[in-house]
Image 1 (cartoon, rainbow, N blue to C red):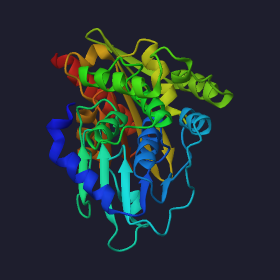
Image 2: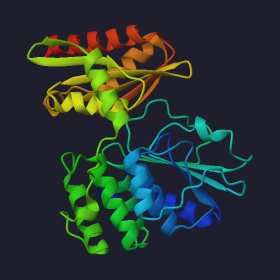
Image 3: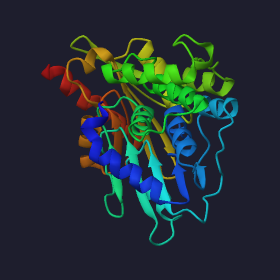
Image 4: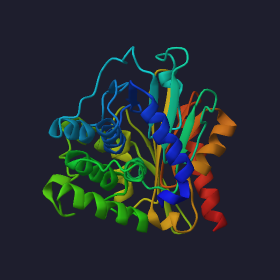
Amino acid sequence: MKPTDDASVFDGAIRLLESKVHPVYVLHPHPDADCVASAYALYSAFPGAAIWSPSKPDRFAQLMIERHSIPVAEEFPDQADLAVILDTPHTAFVRDHLKRGTSIMVIDHHEQGQTEENGVTLSLTVPRAPSCSEIVAELLLHAGRRPERNAAEVLLIGILSDTGGLKRATASTLRTCASLLELAGLEIQSPTLSRSVPMEEGEQVAVLKGMQRMVYRRVGGFTVCCTHSSAFESTVASVLLSAGADAVFVAAESGGFVRVTGRASERVLARGFNLVTLFRSIAAGFGGETGGHPGAAVLKSEADMEALLNSCAAEFIDWCNGV
């Protein structure tokens, strides 16, 4: 990603941030390290009302918050005059908190699911960027507001987290990382950039139960796995993917909805497979919303859990038969 490619949108975002006194940086539900890093870097460069999270961050993000003294508010600030929604195309979860006339900015890198354009003042969406942290880093550099050392380090962690340790990095990502490493005074192998977090007991149990409930199919040399879990769906999906699966679908029921977390291997991605496309097809048939990346996406629906998992597997098998 080159800043000049999005210069007009970058300039518009900078003007909007500079024109507001109390911007609030909004994290997505159960925010990850990439989302938190993006918010903190913006908060450091354009101080405002708060960084706000609608729910508890994931474990690695929480560890990063503690290590880097990142202030995250539990209550949405009343004085907010701009909501900067990060790392998600969906704005519904924050709208009830906004006063009439409050501006909304979306900064995101996902393939759009059901972005609600109504009421969004500015959308800075760059699907080709592997992380939201990279977009924010480029925005700050474009604005001439170089991230201070702690913010640069946090942005590096966000980028490393969302690119799988640079496995999904682009040439632009590497250039951005080089700039951030210089600002942070770090080497890429620095222990402070480590993303290693020991699995807690509940996470281990969720993975083992997910494996116990798993069903799989082999088609055309590819493997698809389906299972369900009551917690830590992302971890369950990642473990099954690392065990050799090519497509993984992990469902969980909560609040009357079913959330299906999907993961795809580099092997099928290289052949053109796209989880977002698959989930959009499922959502069209069952109802629901989706968003994410070709290799990591989420589907939320009110449909039956088993029916959703069966349809996900069937759609992947159809894809296998077509390649």
